[in-house]
Image 1 (cartoon, rainbow, N blue to C red):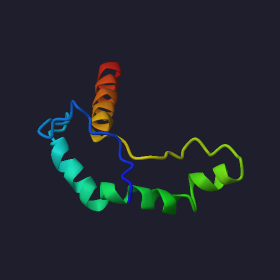
Image 2 (image 1 turned 90 degrees about the horizontal axis):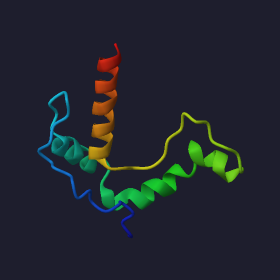
Image 3 (image 1 turned 120 degrees about the vertical axis):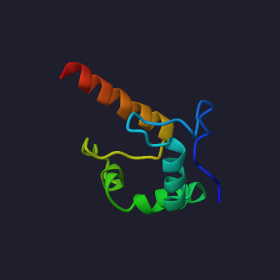
Image 4 (image 1 turned 180 degrees about the vertical axis):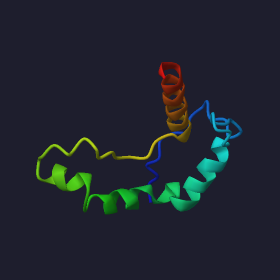
Length: 91
């Protein structure tokens, strides 16, 4: 089965921690155990039967609350940390 997971982030440091002190490497390990990267294409195929894809199939724009895809954990962690820092600086 072809692996559809993007190339590994060259800046990924499994020992890096979020603002809450959680090691990204441990989170990535858990995600990979729950959702093995080699099974991404079969998960994509299953996802096309509901949620976002039923709208795409009908040529309709999906509701904005739907998201799709698997992406880099470090990017997501940095996004959450920056959102938290922004919130702290404005409250």
